[in-house]
Amino acid sequence: MSYQNYSLKQLQAIDAEHHLHPFTDHKDLRQAGTRVIVRADGPFIYDSEGNEILDGMAGLWCVAVGYGREELARAAYEQMKELPYYNSFFRCSTPTPTLLAARLAEIAPKGLDQVFFGSSGSEANDTALRLVRRYWQLEGKPEKNRIISRRTAYHGSTIAGASLGGMSGMHDQLGGAVPNIVHVMPPYAYELANEGESDHDFGLRAAKAVEDAILEAGADKVAAFIGEPIQGAGGVRIPPASYWPEIQRICRKYDVLLMLDEVITGYGRTGEWFAAQSYGIEPDTITTAKALTSGYQPLSALLVGERVASTIVEKGGEFYHGYTYSGHPVACAVALKNLEIIEREGLIERVRDDTGPYLAEALRAAVGDHPLVGEVRGFGLLGAIEIVKDKATRERFQPAGSAAVVVRDHAVANGLMIRATGDTMIMSPPLIWTRATIDLACGRLKKALDLAARDLGA
Image (cartoon, rainbow, N blue to C red):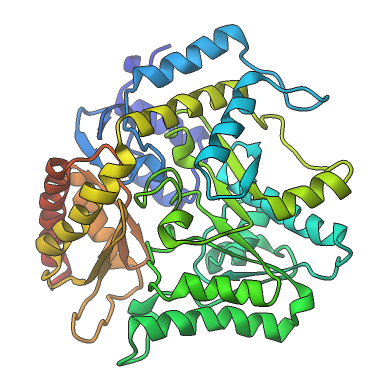
């Protein structure tokens, strides 16, 4: 039966009765009632009451080419008719994952020529953890199994992904994380830089925290460092230019593998296919998902460098790991077409040369002087706004995160979907946004901040 036969209240009641949402206070949601999104087109989503909302989060960081792309629906349909599913076990493959793996090898940073498919970024990071630890076992160093990560990092929501990540709330609910994973400070200058410390010096100090963790454990015990080029779910935390070159130097000095999590930054968001290319990083693995299919199908791809891959292939025997939907033919068909669209429409070049710089400039011009805004930052089509009670002292509203939720709710009510993470508002719009779309978003954001300031007495 079509959803159109149900009223909003009926849908909300059914949702409350049966649906457990991700990252949700279920009691609070069921009292308030869920918003029901029923359709989308281009950069806009529409709820069941007909409200048009400009999607400033690209779904959940993923809808790179926007909504309503017939080419992607057709790619899925044609593949479903021909071969809706077959697995990659039993020494079998299907054409689309084979061709997609080759395409990813073409666009990836040099040397990352092998691909392991899953269905989500969480699965990709689980796979990366398994692969890296297996690599050191095969190299005769099983004790080299510690992973260094960062506080407020997000690497997924499975047990392994949550353990790799640095979200304290997730750790509290785990009841026991995967062992031998440690977390150090993130390169978050707004809160962690010392008074008078330059961005350059802060970047070096944040990188030194990784070196200190290696030395504390002993380099012979440390397998890898994992990091998002730009911390996304943690608050779009953009590292100083000095940070990643120093991280790379440290990893090479101590023979520690470098794992990048590009689930958010991959496939054009920073103005290159991968943020590794934007920052000049040469990683051993890259986890990707989200924009690989623009969210039209669930798919992840772990890109594996020659050093790790050759050992796994030549010395490993059977790798006891994989998923029912590894290399799903329909998802891979959609990914191939999605990458074609991104390239054909020049979306990466647009982000690098036009809309990326313009987004950062427009946000600063629109809200940088607002009394609630402590800092505006951006890189490519990623943006962040720090919400403060006092601009000069950077004092936050209490309880932590409460003010950002007020801003978010006003933004959505005024037609802009934006996310509140702690005391930070974050944006990750579709790559199809234009300057006109950015201007529209900035106007709606300014209105939301003004209304929030009124409510907060600022």
